Amino acid sequence: MKNTIDKKAKTNYGIMPLIAERWSPVLFSDKQIEEEKLMQVFEAARWAPSSRNEQPWRFIYAHNGTPEFNKMIEALMEGNQDWAKDVPVLVIVLSEKFSSFNGEPMFHYMYDTGAASMQMQLQALELGIYSHTMGGFYAEKTKDLFKIPENLEIVSFVAFGYPTDKINNRPSHLQERDKSPRDRKPLSDIVFKGAF
Ligand SMILES: Cc1cc2nc3c(=O)[nH]c(=O)nc-3n(C[C@H](O)[C@H](O)[C@H](O)COP(=O)(O)O)c2cc1C
Image 1: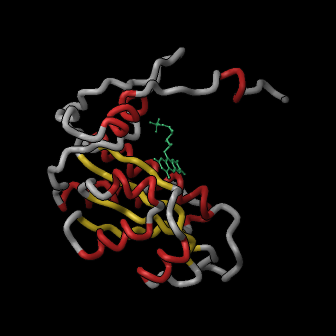
Image 2: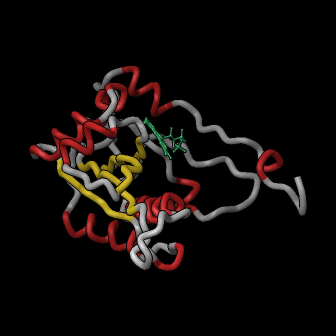
């Protein structure tokens, strides 16, 4: 299934098609995601690099229509609830904060978990599944609803779903969001040869 909206990155240099074609929709198909494919997505996360191979990432997932999914919606900020209530799968991305070797706080735990999260999202797209990361959630509410232990940071929520070819009967503000062009800083603002 191909996304009907073409938001492929307009790049100055050639990049991997998967990276160019990834974008974050708010409108998805209601087709459920097969359990096997979800496991492929988590398997991709599992093989991410991490500082001292600590592998601090943890994931909780839920399918739409389950009580756990409804709890995830409850934990999201209202602007995200608006569209995420209709996505097929939600994932809570968590990260262990303390080293499993010496119990010390880790410096790179968020970095490592971000890398795992990105591997997950690129693997999903390889399987035709789009994703949308959300930082807009209530941390305390998430902790209470899911009984998250103190040693774990709640990093993000991620929505997953197949693309939809039927956006015309969906709310117009969400259609507008998905049709809006993608934008990035120029390479010259972010890359410096040798020094700032
Ligand atoms: C850490 C993080 C938090 C984000 N939080 C939200 C969010 O709460 N709600 C939302 O709609 N999008 C959220 N986004 C999606 C970004 O807005 C989106 O990735 C960015 O605008 C670039 O668009 P693209 O992913 O389509 O290229 C978040 C993305 C990241 C990486």
